[in-house]
Length: 452
Image (cartoon, rainbow, N blue to C red; front, side, top):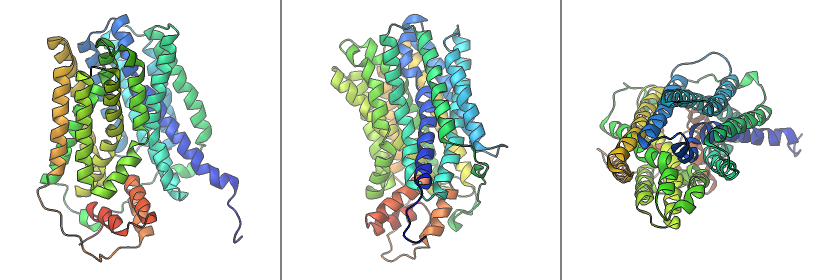
């Protein structure tokens, strides 16, 4: 009836869905993928595990993530996204717990590879389900809650390991606890995201006319692909070894329990923050700024002499790595021609290659030098180059037309959502709500949806 209030279920269902998605990413990414970082110092002492061996195990996980992301993003798999990501989350819990029973480098690497593959499937299929259903409910803004699950999960894993280790548990028991925590979250997620046959994802092939071309890489697109790989290499060394660095550096041991927590707390809101920064200053400028800020954090992590500076390094890492991830994909999609899934696969491959090489290189460097300084300086340099590659374009930005012809927003919004551009939709809707019509037009033009 006109003027009637929405039902309680209609109001709370999208929120429950977004919360379920956030918990799925928290379990799969914060625990399944990244809990290795706070557990690593205990494994290094208890196994024992050298830096080179630790880097090899980390690289196996990132290789599994790369394989899983490509398998989930290219082509279609039968069944519902819910069944896929719940099954993958169960596999993530099992592989985490199995680390506590495993012995030997080969077993560690195999389990982390499988865990990386599972975490990628959770990310791909939970996002496909949650984001589509939020779009149908007209609550696309809640996607920020969904993606906040990564940072929240990192923070949770830091607290979990600190509490368990403080109770005197061994590194094996830390892995058992991680697996149990994932299973507990799986139960909550299954209740928050109910079975719904309508949740099956049916890709809609709606592509801007400007993108219906050959799939050749332009010079600008090649730069963002290379930059994305350099970013993968640049962030992952610190993301893998920051807890070990804190433990092994005199005067920083008191920060060990807090560095990974700081990374997670700063990562949780970072996508929303960088989207808004991008809307104000431009995407390329925001990407370059985030890369430079992360390079500063990576450098600071190995030169910090006080716990405060080490926590600042962790904050810079957490505040930027998810933002750079999102901005890089948005820029690549804007520059790409042809099927958008192809550039997603190319970007994922480039990023994944950087992630695989980074921990292995850091472990080898540590074996040769006895510390992580050389590897971290190389990572910081890679991040600076990545920022410059994106900031410097082959062609000048076309002058903005004062009165462009803007298509119907609802139709364009549906098209953007069908292509998975939820971050762009969020940014534009925020600008429209704040009266920033010119900024909204600029965002659409930069992403290839408006002609001058």
